[in-house]
Image (tube, rainbow, N blue to C red; front, side, top):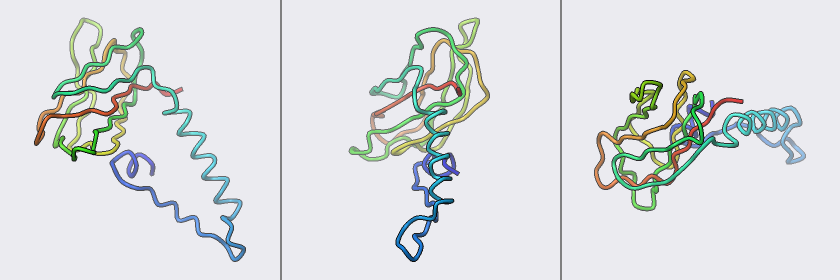
Length: 143
């Protein structure tokens, strides 16, 4: 649910409604806590991250790693500019391989893909309406 909402530049509506005492029921509260724990496990500490300007940004990793998530954020103070993009990984043999793609980034976009051993990540904007301003580009390996 998180990946299909927050991970796609939208809000997440939990539907946790306060009871007659104006408190969130314990069962709903516990589920929210479990979800928070799982999100911190998956996305709490990136292996590497950066920001950058332009249609292409490359993120070097401290050492080759099996990456399975990226988080991308545009600097939306200047508007949402990216219309399509591709995320690529530098795989053994020094070849760039597409890992995933998308049609907008906005405030936040989370891309999941099969774990792939890479030395670098690259975000390549394929269509934009103005200069691309990447606020955050981060790579993760599921713990």
